[in-house]
Length: 243
Image (cartoon, rainbow, N blue to C red; front, side, top):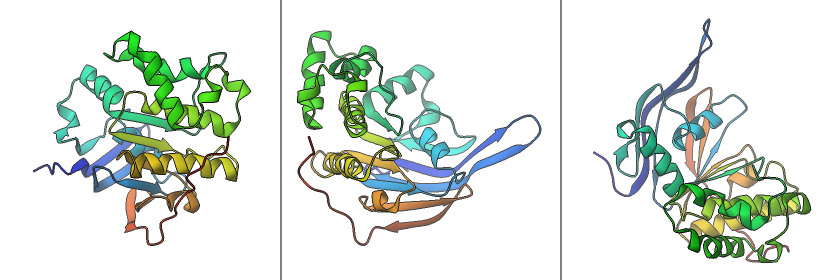
């Protein structure tokens, strides 16, 4: 029975890859829940299954077996088109590599997900400007990615993830390519989205200092959950952005 307070429920999830000769088990009987509005970090060494889990949870890949219930419904019951619509409307992604289009303005980069939405085109500019303002970059609207710092580019990526007002944001190593100061600014924005806007955040990171912004940390090791614990001394962030 699904719990409507949980946005994610994972039961005995397995994911294996077969290259024709050998089979690799990337996730092995993983089970956990994520409640709506929670800030969860997933940690583990390289090869522990973090990225595989992110791709399954973000509906970018299918599990080999087990049940994944997203917002009260088994993902296996959705068609391919329904999953695509779910990703567009309910989920926002922030990646380590930013994934911005070169020679394209901040405003146009942020508007990109709206192309696949049912939001009327006359609303696109207003929505994009609101998302850009939320990350403190209104003064960079017409700049291209090459004209921005790494921290600013990641903030554009966060604005883009917000454009469809998703219920959940997956952040994959969002501070991995940033210096310490920029990383703190990015984590400040992500934490505000959780605390002030009620967004569910699932953060993939190998940095303890980044994970400590979360309420809870799942530690993966060799495809299994090694530990699932509350963060005892959760970090707080500054209310100010560095312009």
